[in-house]
Length: 92
Image (cartoon, rainbow, N blue to C red; front, side, top):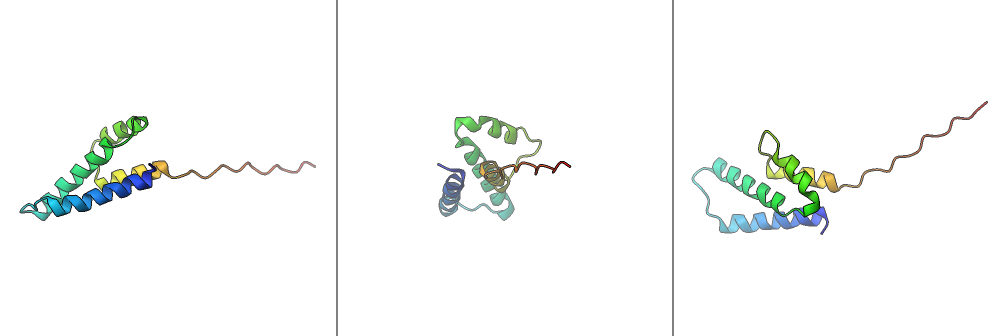
């Protein structure tokens, strides 16, 4: 599964979570709990070859948001532009 499909699946789970999870008294507290839950879910579902990425994200001094984790994962999977060789200088 490519990273875009993986993040899309996570977004679908968020919609299910919102439909099934009771809302707390505080909207801010609910948003914080929801964000942390899905950040952990996103990292837990990564394949073993991305263990180093998961460890790097979790070793951060601050707990990243779900959106931040998804941005990092999508950036990781984005194709990097091919380097173009420098044009040869004409010799005189």
